[in-house]
Length: 140
Image 1 (cartoon, rainbow, N blue to C red):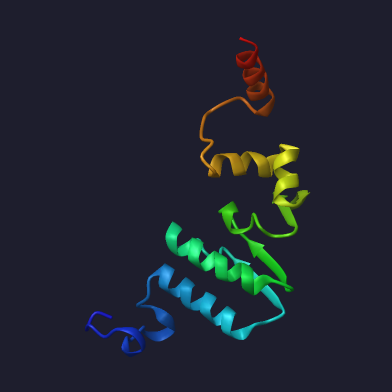
Image 2: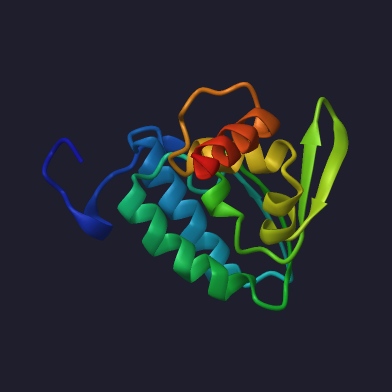
């Protein structure tokens, strides 16, 4: 805290108001791990964490999720890619469902978002044109 207290001695304020978003998120995840509930609802569980902290926590979350029903809301797809079944919603409607591999293979909205988030930020007019360009280049 601002008075130099560390660890369990630190004052976090009423309802954690003195904590950063990432600190609050780590505490919430720790509570989930201690509770060991059969159903987990995770809403943007790692959104306020840096990539290193997210990777470390994800590994433990995956262990925690084994044999449980998990409802996870995420915009960062790496958070949910390892789950058994993904449901993609757009404008309140289910538009795709399947495993990560199945959804990437379908080439729909999930595949487009995955490509953008995993480094595919090249602008193009869609998958069909990209495939045609790749075929053209391979033929040359």
